[in-house]
Image (cartoon, rainbow, N blue to C red):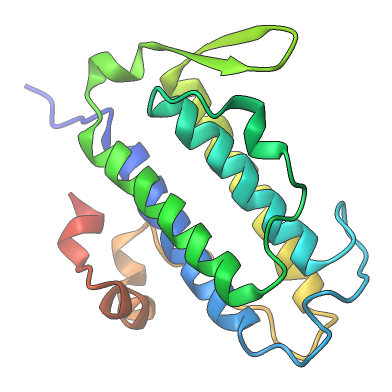
Length: 187
Protein backbone atom coordinates (compact mmCIF):
# COMPACT_ATOMS: atom_id res chain seq x y z
CA UNK A 1 0.00 0.00 0.00
CA UNK A 2 1.41 3.39 -1.01
CA UNK A 3 1.57 6.39 1.32
CA UNK A 4 0.98 8.67 -1.66
CA UNK A 5 -1.77 11.21 -1.05
CA UNK A 6 -2.75 13.13 -4.20
CA UNK A 7 -4.44 15.80 -2.06
CA UNK A 8 -1.34 16.59 0.02
CA UNK A 9 0.30 18.83 -2.57
CA UNK A 10 -2.83 20.96 -2.90
CA UNK A 11 -3.16 21.32 0.89
CA UNK A 12 0.50 22.33 1.11
CA UNK A 13 0.14 24.83 -1.72
CA UNK A 14 -2.93 26.37 -0.09
CA UNK A 15 -1.04 26.80 3.19
CA UNK A 16 2.00 28.08 1.28
CA UNK A 17 -0.18 30.64 -0.46
CA UNK A 18 -1.67 31.92 2.79
CA UNK A 19 1.70 32.03 4.55
CA UNK A 20 3.45 33.79 1.65
CA UNK A 21 0.65 36.35 1.49
CA UNK A 22 0.90 36.85 5.25
CA UNK A 23 4.62 37.57 4.99
CA UNK A 24 4.20 39.75 1.89
CA UNK A 25 1.44 41.88 3.43
CA UNK A 26 3.43 42.23 6.65
CA UNK A 27 6.29 43.60 4.60
CA UNK A 28 3.95 45.93 2.73
CA UNK A 29 2.60 47.25 6.03
CA UNK A 30 5.96 48.94 6.48
CA UNK A 31 5.63 51.00 3.30
CA UNK A 32 6.06 54.74 3.55
CA UNK A 33 3.07 56.96 2.64
CA UNK A 34 2.59 56.98 -1.12
CA UNK A 35 4.62 53.78 -1.75
CA UNK A 36 1.52 51.57 -2.04
CA UNK A 37 0.07 53.68 -4.86
CA UNK A 38 3.35 54.77 -6.47
CA UNK A 39 3.85 54.01 -10.15
CA UNK A 40 6.25 51.10 -10.62
CA UNK A 41 7.55 48.87 -13.37
CA UNK A 42 5.53 45.69 -13.68
CA UNK A 43 2.58 44.11 -15.43
CA UNK A 44 0.36 46.28 -13.23
CA UNK A 45 1.48 49.83 -12.52
CA UNK A 46 1.63 49.72 -8.70
CA UNK A 47 1.68 47.53 -5.64
CA UNK A 48 -1.94 48.52 -5.06
CA UNK A 49 -2.98 47.43 -8.55
CA UNK A 50 -1.07 44.15 -8.39
CA UNK A 51 -2.34 43.15 -4.95
CA UNK A 52 -5.92 44.02 -5.92
CA UNK A 53 -5.52 41.91 -9.07
CA UNK A 54 -4.35 38.90 -7.06
CA UNK A 55 -7.38 39.28 -4.81
CA UNK A 56 -10.04 39.57 -7.50
CA UNK A 57 -8.62 36.63 -9.46
CA UNK A 58 -8.65 34.62 -6.21
CA UNK A 59 -12.29 35.61 -5.72
CA UNK A 60 -13.11 34.41 -9.24
CA UNK A 61 -11.38 31.04 -9.01
CA UNK A 62 -12.11 30.19 -5.37
CA UNK A 63 -15.79 30.94 -5.90
CA UNK A 64 -15.85 28.68 -8.98
CA UNK A 65 -14.02 25.93 -7.08
CA UNK A 66 -16.64 26.20 -4.32
CA UNK A 67 -19.42 25.87 -6.90
CA UNK A 68 -20.46 29.51 -6.63
CA UNK A 69 -21.88 31.85 -9.22
CA UNK A 70 -19.79 35.00 -8.78
CA UNK A 71 -18.27 34.66 -12.24
CA UNK A 72 -17.20 37.83 -13.99
CA UNK A 73 -18.73 39.99 -11.23
CA UNK A 74 -15.41 39.39 -9.46
CA UNK A 75 -13.84 41.74 -12.02
CA UNK A 76 -16.48 44.48 -11.82
CA UNK A 77 -14.08 46.83 -10.00
CA UNK A 78 -10.42 46.58 -11.04
CA UNK A 79 -9.17 47.91 -7.71
CA UNK A 80 -11.82 47.32 -5.05
CA UNK A 81 -9.58 48.42 -2.18
CA UNK A 82 -7.58 51.63 -1.80
CA UNK A 83 -6.15 50.82 1.62
CA UNK A 84 -3.65 48.05 2.28
CA UNK A 85 -5.19 47.00 5.62
CA UNK A 86 -8.65 46.48 4.13
CA UNK A 87 -7.20 44.71 1.10
CA UNK A 88 -5.25 42.44 3.44
CA UNK A 89 -8.41 41.54 5.38
CA UNK A 90 -10.11 40.52 2.12
CA UNK A 91 -7.06 38.56 0.92
CA UNK A 92 -6.77 36.74 4.24
CA UNK A 93 -10.45 35.74 4.02
CA UNK A 94 -10.14 34.27 0.53
CA UNK A 95 -6.87 32.56 1.50
CA UNK A 96 -8.70 30.86 4.37
CA UNK A 97 -11.49 29.79 2.02
CA UNK A 98 -8.88 28.18 -0.24
CA UNK A 99 -7.19 26.42 2.68
CA UNK A 100 -10.57 25.12 3.85
CA UNK A 101 -11.45 23.93 0.36
CA UNK A 102 -8.14 22.08 0.05
CA UNK A 103 -8.56 20.56 3.51
CA UNK A 104 -11.88 19.05 2.37
CA UNK A 105 -10.61 17.77 -0.99
CA UNK A 106 -10.92 14.16 -2.05
CA UNK A 107 -9.39 12.37 -5.01
CA UNK A 108 -12.82 12.22 -6.61
CA UNK A 109 -13.33 15.95 -6.14
CA UNK A 110 -10.03 16.71 -7.88
CA UNK A 111 -11.36 14.98 -10.99
CA UNK A 112 -14.64 16.93 -11.06
CA UNK A 113 -15.20 19.54 -13.73
CA UNK A 114 -15.31 23.17 -12.63
CA UNK A 115 -17.26 25.70 -14.67
CA UNK A 116 -15.65 29.10 -15.14
CA UNK A 117 -17.91 31.84 -16.47
CA UNK A 118 -15.95 33.66 -19.19
CA UNK A 119 -18.89 35.81 -20.27
CA UNK A 120 -19.43 34.58 -23.81
CA UNK A 121 -18.66 30.99 -22.86
CA UNK A 122 -18.33 28.57 -19.98
CA UNK A 123 -14.83 27.14 -19.61
CA UNK A 124 -14.82 23.62 -18.21
CA UNK A 125 -11.69 22.32 -16.51
CA UNK A 126 -10.78 19.62 -14.00
CA UNK A 127 -10.55 20.91 -10.44
CA UNK A 128 -6.92 19.80 -10.12
CA UNK A 129 -6.02 21.89 -13.18
CA UNK A 130 -7.90 24.94 -11.92
CA UNK A 131 -6.13 24.68 -8.57
CA UNK A 132 -2.74 24.32 -10.27
CA UNK A 133 -3.47 27.35 -12.43
CA UNK A 134 -4.60 29.41 -9.44
CA UNK A 135 -1.48 28.60 -7.41
CA UNK A 136 0.72 29.46 -10.40
CA UNK A 137 -1.14 32.76 -10.90
CA UNK A 138 -0.69 33.72 -7.26
CA UNK A 139 3.02 32.89 -7.28
CA UNK A 140 3.55 34.78 -10.54
CA UNK A 141 2.02 38.01 -9.26
CA UNK A 142 3.51 37.74 -5.76
CA UNK A 143 6.85 37.66 -7.55
CA UNK A 144 5.97 40.93 -9.25
CA UNK A 145 5.05 42.49 -5.90
CA UNK A 146 8.33 41.21 -4.51
CA UNK A 147 10.24 42.91 -7.34
CA UNK A 148 8.28 46.15 -6.87
CA UNK A 149 9.16 46.18 -3.18
CA UNK A 150 12.84 46.24 -4.13
CA UNK A 151 12.25 49.78 -5.40
CA UNK A 152 10.38 50.90 -2.31
CA UNK A 153 11.19 51.75 1.29
CA UNK A 154 10.67 48.07 2.27
CA UNK A 155 13.00 45.14 1.65
CA UNK A 156 11.31 42.28 -0.23
CA UNK A 157 10.65 39.35 2.13
CA UNK A 158 11.66 35.73 1.62
CA UNK A 159 8.57 33.99 0.21
CA UNK A 160 9.60 30.37 -0.33
CA UNK A 161 10.01 28.90 3.14
CA UNK A 162 6.66 27.23 3.54
CA UNK A 163 6.74 23.84 1.79
CA UNK A 164 9.62 21.65 3.01
CA UNK A 165 10.15 20.38 6.55
CA UNK A 166 13.66 21.80 6.74
CA UNK A 167 12.32 25.37 6.52
CA UNK A 168 10.25 25.06 9.70
CA UNK A 169 12.78 27.20 11.58
CA UNK A 170 11.98 30.16 9.28
CA UNK A 171 8.18 30.19 9.45
CA UNK A 172 7.40 30.02 13.16
CA UNK A 173 6.33 33.65 13.47
CA UNK A 174 3.79 33.34 10.66
CA UNK A 175 2.40 30.05 11.98
CA UNK A 176 2.03 31.48 15.47
CA UNK A 177 0.30 34.62 14.19
CA UNK A 178 -2.18 32.50 12.21
CA UNK A 179 -2.61 30.05 15.13
CA UNK A 180 -1.39 27.19 12.93
CA UNK A 181 1.24 24.59 13.71
CA UNK A 182 3.72 22.47 11.79
CA UNK A 183 1.48 19.41 11.80
CA UNK A 184 -0.98 21.24 9.57
CA UNK A 185 1.72 21.80 6.96
CA UNK A 186 3.33 18.39 7.06
CA UNK A 187 0.49 15.95 6.86
